[in-house]
Structures are given as C-alpha cells and as structure tokens.
Amino acid sequence: MGQKEAKKVAPPGGLILQRDGVGTDWSGRLLVRADFRDQVLILVNLKNANLREALLNRADLSGANFSEAMLSDADLSEANLTGANFFGADLRWANLRQATLVGANLREANLDGADLGCTRLIGVDFKNASLGDTNLRGADLRCAVQLSAQPLKKAQIDRHTRMPQTLQGDGDAEGGGTGRGRSRTGVAPQTGVSSVRPPWRPMAREEIEKRFRLV
Image (tube, rainbow, N blue to C red):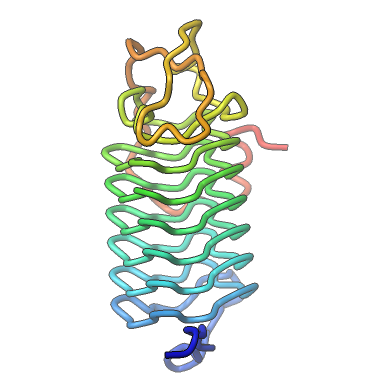
C-alpha cells in the first residue's frame, strides 16, 4: 500500500463566500483527508462533518462551526480558528500547533493526545473538555474559562504555558498524564474554576480583540 495522500476537495456546489465573509454549509459531509490548506473558510458550517486526517493548516476558519465534527489526526497547525465552535468535537491526536483559537468553544471536545503547543487559547471555553496527554507546552491560556487544575494534571505543560489568573499560584504542582518532558508549573490544585461566559456564539474579530485586549 502506498502512502496516503490528501485529496484536493472541490466543495459541493463550490465554495460561496458572501461579501460579509459568511461561508456555505458543509454539515455532515464526508471530507476524510480533504486538503483545505491556506484557504479562506470564514464562518463555514462543518457540524458533524468527518474531517479525519484533513489538512487545514494555515486556513482562515475564524467563526467556523465544528460542533461534533470528527477531526482526529487532522492538521490545523497555524490555522486561524478565532471564535470557532468545537463543541463535542473529536480532536484526538490533531495537530493544532501554533494555531489561534482566541474565544473558541472547546466544551466537551476530546483533545486527548492533541498537539496545542505554542497555541493561542485566550478566552477559550474548556468546560468538560478531555485533555489526556494533550500538549499545552508554551500555550497561552490566559482568560480561559471553565478550566480547572484537575484536567490539566493529565496534560503536558511547562514553564512557558501561560495560565489563567485563577490558576496562577505559588504551588509547584506537577502535571500528570505521561509526564514526558514536564516542568513544575505553579498550577494550584485547590483553585476553582474561572468565571463563566455566556454560551458560544460567533464573534466578530473586532469584538474578540476588544474583549480580550489583544494587540
């Protein structure tokens, strides 16, 4: 058997982007190993789509809806996922390294084994997300909501991981999980959950930048 190759997918009916940036509806589509590298797919609807092993690196997917989508082993490295919705999505072993997920919804998402190293996760909602052996080394988690110390014990974190203020402390709790390459972090296990945000909705980039005071 030869090496698997990503297939360049022509979206059903062609990609239609309105002047306001709203994309088309690809919910429930079978897009295994699809190649969407470097494409502009703002606010596209991929709910329940099968994007296993898809190539989405460097794509602009801001405001996209990935709720309950299959994204295991997908490559989303360096993608713009600002305000994207990943509620209940399967992101096991996905590559999100250096992606931007500012204001994204990761509630109930499965991130086991995913690579989020050096990823911008400012204001992300992590309620009930699974972080088993997730690489968060160098990730920016400032203002993350519904994130507690307990699931972080299973993730890979280091001294370069920027924690929410509610999880910053003087303790030297070690990360859990496999413990590969872990450093002491100052995550205090006794700290509670950060402040709750209203349910996810698409946010304009200007609103996100204002809310989280991004430069």
